Structure formats: structure tokens, C-alpha cells
Image (cartoon, rainbow, N blue to C red):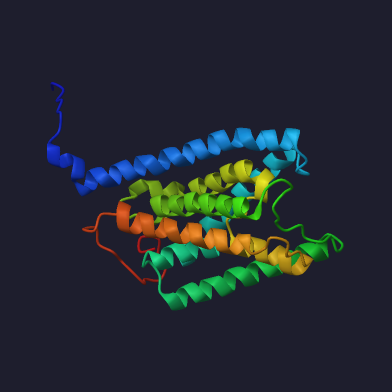
Length: 256
């Protein structure tokens, strides 16, 4: 069959599908360059400034978070949608995917889970104080806030693209892996600067048990803003309006 080439029509430039496709390419390229180039800057931060973290330690932390989030999302996706993060819940709430009441239940459960985990860690490690998150030397609080907004945006955007989008198809099967990978990549970028939290519950549990509140507000405001923005962008600018929208459904991944 002969190949078909087409220049396209003038109206293609303003067609909603073209706009959504261009937006998708913009954000996808942003995610790639932010993680790739950012990792080089992070290594510079480690090697030439005192961050208290070596490159090998950073890789271990990134892998631990990526692997554990992959499992956490996998074991909860078919029951709760696999949020594991108040920022993800915020994104789905603003996107109209869950009700306000269910979001509140999720937030309470996520925070309690983080606190219990930190308490048990303190117990089994013979009273080692949880480390928590803070902005490193030479990095301002507002820089840390911007880091958290950007990194959480890329995380929640990935959640929407792989786990929520009605047109995801077979891509949904690798959603937990993709979500774990973006968290690991963001830790390699943001870890030397502000710890790369992206999750208010992840920050709150160790902060409460270890009583470490330095810069703590950043790890609430940044992720909630970034996650909410990602939910709004994907829901109202990427997902076609003609696709059926199953809202406020409990939990099956196909209705997430």
C-alpha cells in the first residue's frame, strides 16, 4: 500500500486534538529535561557543596522510594485507586474524580499511615529519630517551594496519564511502575536541594515523630499546589470533553 503524506489543514492548528497533543508533548519534554539536566545539577550540588548526601546514598534513597511506591500503588490501586499521597488526592479532587468526603477520608488515612510508620521505625531502630525533610544550605525556602510544586506536578501528571485517563488502554498496567519511576527520578534531581518530598504525608509522619519542623510548610504548600495544578491541567486541557467522565465512583481503576 503506498504511503500517504499530507500537509494538513489550516483548521488543524486550532483543533482541540492538536492543542491537546501539543500540550502533551510540551509537558512530556519538560519532565524529561527537568529530570535529566536536573540530575547533573544535583550531582554538582553534592560534589561541590555540602549537602550531607553522597551520590551513592542519593541513589539508594531514590531506589527505595521508587520501589516502595511501585508496590504501594500496586497493592492499593484496585481498592482505593492507589493515591498514597495527599497531593495525588488533591489532583483527583480538583479534577472531579473523587468526592470531597472521600478525599477527606483519604487524607486522614494517609497521614495516620505515615505517623504509624514513623513510630514503628523509631521503635524497631532502637529510638533512632526520623530525619524528615528540610531545605539544604544555600537553597532558599522559595526555591524549595518551587521545586516541590514542579516535582509534584510531574508526579500527579504521570498518575493522570497512566492511571486515570480514559484512553490509557493497556498503559494502565504499568501505571505503578511509571509512578514509582518518576518519583525516583525526581529524588535524583531534587534530593540534594530540598529532599524531594512530593508528598505531605511522607513529610508529616517523620516530622511529628522526630519533632523536626524546619521548613515543614514547604512540604504541604508545594505538593498540594503542584498536584492540584496537574489535576486541573490534565482533566480540563488534555482529556477530551467527549470522553465519558465517571466521577465520584468508588475506586475501581477503570472509574478512578
